[in-house]
Every structure is written in structure tokens, then in C-alpha cells.
Length: 283
Ligand SMILES: [Ca+2]
Ligand SMILES: [Ca+2]
Ligand SMILES: [Ca+2]
Image 1 (cartoon, rainbow, N blue to C red):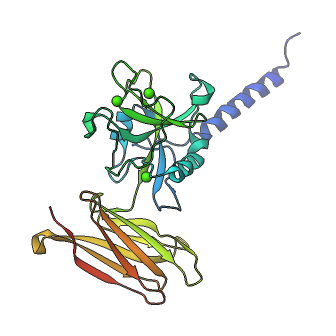
Image 2 (image 1 turned 180 degrees about the vertical axis):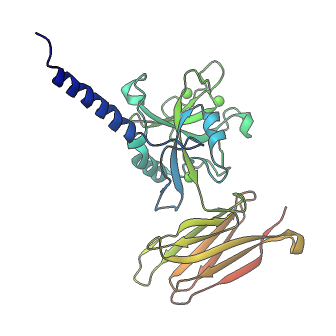
């Protein structure tokens, strides 16, 4: 006896619906290959997004100019990134279950990126103060070398790997800090209320040299900051800040090329503005 054609049609419709729904759950790929929105990490104010797929070098090249492959200052930052993105990362079923979820991190010992074999370097130049290598890693074991790093779950470790497209078709996390002047200066804001609650200001870029921070809700701007290139005037970069708040704050500005740091303080109950035309010496 043949199958009821209506039932058959129903099944086809169900399959089509399933395909349609599955297709809808896949996030749209942007020109740079970014698969998610940018998520703000409340503990440092940095933003992160998931990219896919390709080699480490492809990920590095696809990264927008105001961002970089993710760097981990500590285990807290790494844990936040995993908990935020694990649900979006496509499992790799061709590897053991312990190694199924993985993404590239911005760590390399390749001479192409100014490092050298065995001397691992973050792509941002920040110090490698925290590492999470697996047992026996990094081992540089692949025949053409392993000069690029990834992090793996649920095994929970870092591994060095090569960039042969053939084998490695992995995702990556991009990170962007509060950076001014084409990424040269990093700005971090810490705030403190009279009742003792505290946190990081969350950054929103406005131009390449200016941005604002919010503390409590994203519609409520608290602080404006700006870097100005005064090199031809007095040989310094200038830093300006304007408070729209009477909450106490500390601004920490780092020159990522020289590691020079300046801090600026806003007093509790006093909206505090300032300018420093000798903030950072020009090269
Ligand atoms: Ca980082
Ligand atoms: Ca290596
Ligand atoms: Ca390895």
C-alpha cells in the first residue's frame, strides 16, 4: 500500500520548515566575516565579537582596524569570553570531544608579527602576564612549525598550531578596547559612587580621537574624552576630558607604543573637567 500523499507532502513541508528555521538561526556574515554582534565585557569595558572561518592569518587580516585578535590579561577575561561565546561557536566534530570548541587568540611566536620562535607575543604588544597552555604545549610539533595560538574547550587549554588552511578552519574572537588616535592610546575609566559602588565606564567611540563613557545606563553619557595631536605645536599629544557627572572617577590613559601612563581624577560631587597639553611626548 502506497503512502498517503498528503502525509508525504506534510513531511516535505516539515523538512522545508526545519531547513528554513535552521537557516534563520545562522547569523548573517558581514563583509569582515564577523558572525555576532559586539558584546561588552563589564569588567574591562572592551567589546568582543566572533569571527569565522579560516586560518589564524586570515582571521588576523579580517580583523577591523580598530580591533585585534582577542588577548587575555587574566583567567577572568578568558572565562568571560568563553561564557559569552560558547553557544555561538560551531563544534568541530572531526576532533575528539575534549577538543570540540575552539577559537584563535592573538598570541603568536611568528617572525611575521615581530615575535621569534618560543618567544610568544600578544598582537597588541601587551605583556604576556597570563598563559593557559595545555600539558606539553606549546610544542611547535607540526612539520611547518606551530606559531599561532588557539584556546580549546572543554579540554580547557591553549594550543599552538600552524596555519595550513587544509586542516585548520577555525573561528576567532576579535576584541576592541577604548582606543584613540588609530589605536595608539588606551583609555580606561573607573567610577565610584558616594555609597561605595564602583565599576568601569563603558566606552563608545565617536571619532578616531574622541569618545564617551557611560556608567549606569547606555543612554546616560557621563564623560567625554579626546586626544589631540599637538606634536607640531609643543611636541606632545594633548588629552582633554569633560565630565557630565558628579560621580568620582579616575581616567587611566596608556600610550600603547611607549607604555607611558597618565591618570586623571574627578572628585566626588564636583563635575571635574581638564586638559593636559603635555600628556604624552611625541616620537
Ligand atoms: Ca584583552
Ligand atoms: Ca612556534
Ligand atoms: Ca601544539
